[in-house]
Length: 254
Image 1 (cartoon, rainbow, N blue to C red):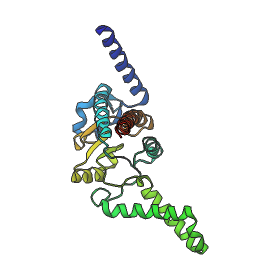
Image 2: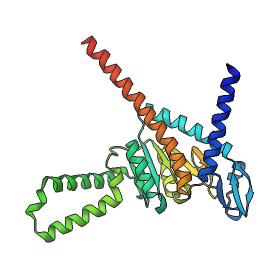
Image 3: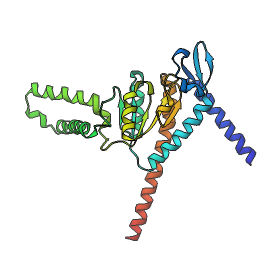
Image 4: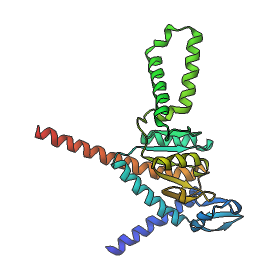
């Protein structure tokens, strides 16, 4: 039985490695751009491009998703962050499926360090959307309505992914570490836990839970975010089941 379990575990690990390679998780940047602190995660060079050791990627990914699961079960607020244009749609897709607040574009300076002020802008957006849905703006002139529409679109582009964020997040998951130095600085100032996909040109020690991987290719980032999504949805399901069971016990006692 133990031998069978060991064989199955080995097969699963091998399958995971093959899937990561197929997704291009192992591709780094040119050797001239490599951050020295990423060297422990590099296994070789191909055509002047550093190749990431996907076995180490698998180890760090597993460590990250287990920690994320714990945070979800503890009801921590997780903010998903991605700045690269090519990843915008993917970040928003995963965030919606996991019901996470997100920033899918340029970081909003002060979001973490000046959250009270930023949250007022988020509330303003929600107020305008509510008034629009109720038809309250119909009493204004067409010119005034157009001005309001422009403001709503501007606020949606900036704060649209944050409407569910009613307090400062506890955890950040940064898709593209190389594009988010300001995010990391703000997170450190507020003492937040930070997960990040770290390419070969970034410093993995700048975050709490680095995942060494290609963070430029959509296929690579999707592979990692799908794993993250699965564990978040699983933890949410466990949490909901536990809450329902607790309510049932309470109802029985009543």
